[in-house]
Image 1: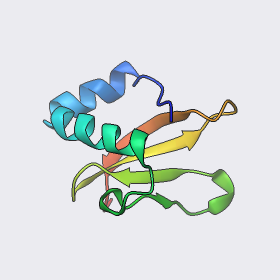
Image 2: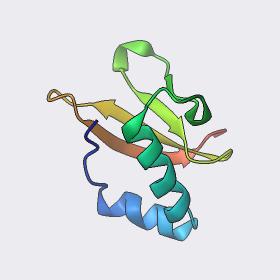
Image 3: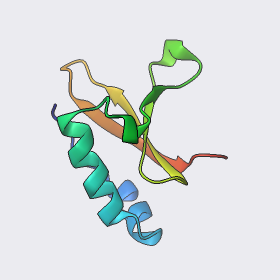
Image 4: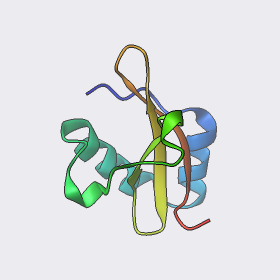
Length: 82
């Protein structure tokens, strides 16, 4: 699965919260198997928006979409319980 490069604001967020290494590890797992149980991949409500998320760690999640070409684009990284 092809994951598009992160936007610069998301990279800065990862650096600010010391999540770069964790994100790199999780994105490699995600690219090889997006349904791996440790990722806790899920579709978000409302389902019509087709937004998905996977776990970076217990506190942070990456929000993503599938593009028209079938690639994955990370659109946000945020606190899981906001």
